[in-house]
Length: 138
Image (cartoon, rainbow, N blue to C red; front, side, top):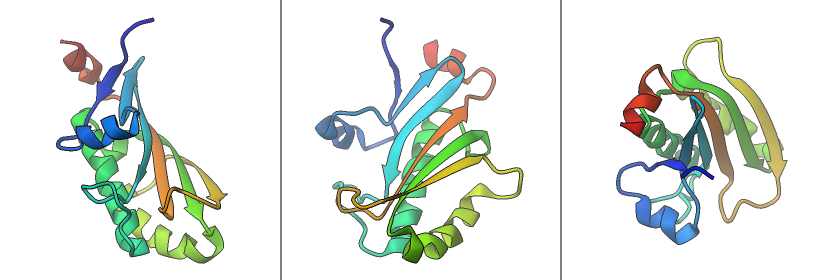
């Protein structure tokens, strides 16, 4: 097996090491990003839902930037929502601030009952810009 090409955002390596997963992996021209939540620097949940969603997007943005990507490079999104019936509108008000104009990435939304104390999680696949994979390997 080849060694995984892991992408770490600045200043959060200890959090990922403690929880035993990689924030993102570059593979075959794509960036596969683990689910991001609205965690504070110590890993605890942000209690306010809209602030939690914004923080999840900021955590995601830090990983994308570390790989040389932006939200424009995202091609596929999966979101997990606790109690989507009551949280969807608040979440979607925040999403618009990050996605920008159409065309938007594909999206799968999943209602869940538990997210380790969080109410929102987002995971994405992004297409690495030309040369980004080469820069990572070199």
